[in-house]
Length: 502
Ligand code: BES
Ligand code: MN
Ligand code: ZN
Image 1 (tube, rainbow, N blue to C red):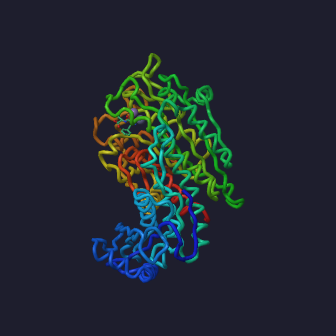
Image 2: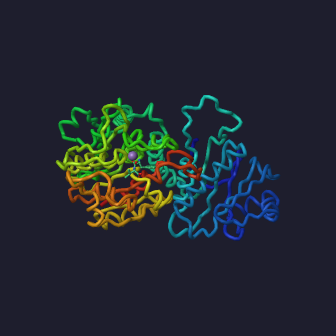
Image 3: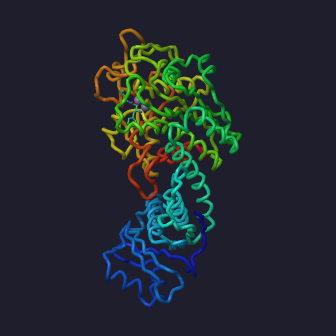
C-alpha cells in the first residue's frame, strides 16, 4: 500500500472518507460533501444507527453530485479526547472496511480536530501508520491466493492542514512499522526455516542500515563459559548462536554514555526437551523466539529512523530438542557468571538462555540498563491474559517509564512483585540455583523473574514476560492474526521519550 499526504481538497476519484463527530455533528468537510451531494449524508444518517461514535462506520455508494465512487463516514466521537492509538485504530479499521468492499484508493480528510493530546497533522500521520500496521500479512507460503479475497486498497491519501508536517511524522512511523514487520515476519516463520543460524543471518541483513552485527558461534560461547545457554541447545541438530547488534546513533556529545541494552529470548523451537510438552498446541512453540524477534525489530526501527541513541541488542538463539545428547533433568551446568544451576525441568529453558545473555551483556557493555523480553512462562497468560505483558524490575524509575510508554502506544505492561521470599525458591540444595521453583505452579512468572535477576549484577533491569503478547489468534485493526510485533513500539516510545534529546 502507498501513502500520501495532501492539503484538504475533495478528491475526483476513488473513495472519500470523512469524519462525523459525537451525536452526528458534521465535520466541516462532511458539511461540504453533504451540500454537494444534495443531502446524501443527512439522508444516510437518518436511516442508520450510526451515531458518530468512535468506531462507527457508514458507506454511501456512488452519491449523486460527487465524483468519488463512495463516501465512507467514520465516527470520531468526542474529538478533544482523541489520541495517537485512536487514530491508528481508525486507519486500520478503514483499511479492513475498504478491502471488504473492494475500494482501490481512498482519501481520508481530517479537519482541524482540536484534540488535547495530538496535533491534527500527527493524527493524520497516525491514521496512515495504523493503516500500514493493519495491512500487514504473512503470505509467503501461500501458493493458492484467491484474487476474490485479496486486499484491493492500494493507495491512501490523508488530507489535513499542515500536510508537510504529517508527511514528516509518518516517515518515522514508517521506519517503526518496518521494525514491527520484521518482528512479525520472524515470529510467524516456522522453525524448519528459522533456526539459530538462519535467524542470525536475518540479523546480519541489518548491517546495510548501519547496525553493527556480530554472531557468536558455539565455540566462542564455550570459551566465554556460557554453559547455561549451550546446555539448552545441546539436544538439537542446529547449532546455537548469540547475536549482538549495535546501533550507535548518539550525537557526539552523548557518544560516551553507557548504551541502552535490550536482551531477547530466542528459542527457535521449544519442545520442552526431555521434559517434553504435550503434543496439542506444540506448534505454537515456533514463536518462542518472540523476545529475540522484538529486539531485532527494535534495532531495525531505531536504525531506520536514525534514533539519536546508542543501543545494543543481544539475543540468545537456541532450539530446545530432545535427543541422545539432550540435557537431562538433574544435570548441573555452569553459567558464564560462574553460578551453577541444577536443571530440574528442561522445559524451563528460556531463563537459562537469558542467564548467559544477560550476564554477557552487562559484563561487556556496562549498560545504562538492561531490558529483556521473553515468552518466558505460561503462568503470565493465566495472570494477565493477552492484554498486558508482565513487568518485573529492580528499578522503580525504569518500571514507571515502561508503564507510561506502554500506555501511550497501546502496548501495556503491568508490574508484578519480586522479593527475597520468591528468590529463595530457586536455591538448589546441591548447586547454587535450580531452574524451577520449589513452590509448584504458584507464582511461576515471578519465580522465573527471580531466577533472571541472579544474572543482572545489580544493573538497572526490567524483564518483560511477553508469552501472552507475542502471538494473536484474533484479528485487530492494527494487529493482524499471527506474530504481533508487540514490544517494538513500546520500546521505541520508551527510548524516544526518555533517552533522546536529553
Ligand atoms: N516457552 C515456554 C512458555 C510459554 C508457554 C510461552 C506458553 C508461550 C506460551 C517456556 O519455555 C516454558 O516452558 N515455561 C514453563 C516453565 C515451567 C516448566 C517452570 C511453563 O510456563 O510452564
Ligand atoms: Mn519451555
Ligand atoms: Zn520456552
